[in-house]
Length: 135
Image: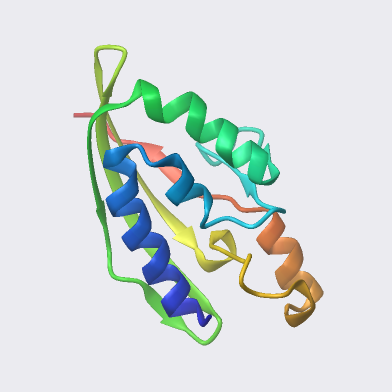
């Protein structure tokens, strides 16, 4: 799967599955070796089990989820997608925005042997840059 297709698949899945709290559809995007971070500077949730744990802890707490995703920007084997999300959590309105780099996306369909070592290492250290936006 090329970078643009993977990025588009990621955005399409999240835009549909996040408001529906479909943790399995989202988890299916990530490889067994994923390191999921949200926000970017917290300790990662390790592996696919960690992704599922993050989703299981957070999706049920989020209400009135609205999300938007930009068009993927791709060049060669790299891609990025902007995203924005607003929801209510513990009676507080939250809005976050971020950018996901292709190295964060589904690598389950790409054999690790097809990735150069540096790309494989980056893929295992998925870091989503995100920030809270004040209303």
